[in-house]
Length: 151
Picture (tube, rainbow, N blue to C red):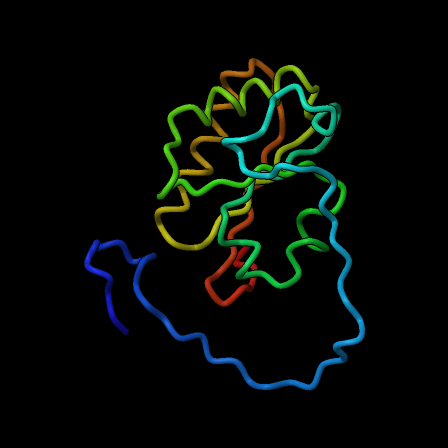
């Protein structure tokens, strides 16, 4: 395994061994996406799809690592995706706080990867809930680089 030189264990190159399984490719999993856009940077806090909606704040990589992300995490929720390592996250806390405060958000699920740099997304959501002035339950779901749920 190689390292890209930045020192972050999450950036270490890994091969994920998979055994070939026969699948029926004629059956496609339906998309559970209920809105556009999805990037937190682009989301208007007053968008109608946030009103009274459960919120999924998801690290960008989760949707690629976890094949069942739509059915297991996204179904019935509004979505905001972000990368705490690569994005300029300074405005994200305020934007999330606005979304939670003005839309009567009943709950927030945070989906992150198991790599250390993803923990920043959980901290951002916790601070946003605090700044919103509302008591909103937050669940954090950790996904392994192999796509399996860790908790």
